Image 1 (tube, rainbow, N blue to C red):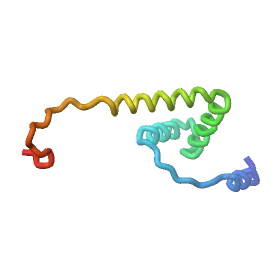
Image 2: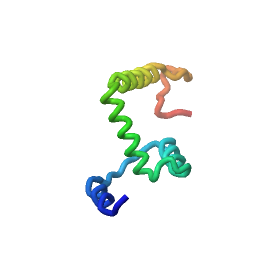
Image 3: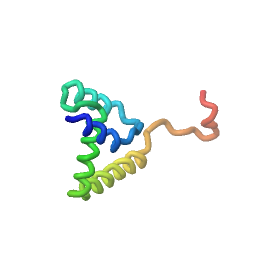
Image 4: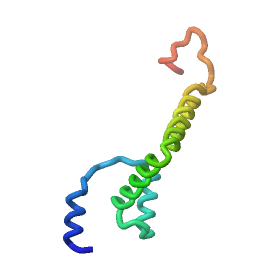
Length: 96
């Protein structure tokens, strides 16, 4: 690639900072180690392009996935942990 194209590419790029899960970070590092992508930035650009294509061509996939995650969160919050019950007359702030 010519240096002119590289300069144009740098002009169109925006530097950002993001926090991602450790599992995703390890996946990005593995992709880079196996030389499937040039860098973490390249991998993130590919992933975002893929997400954009998916939303343009199959938006129901994203909506259904979000709904499934919300239902899982609601189910887990509705399940009460089974622990010992509080005895009457004992303050829970002062456990023995």
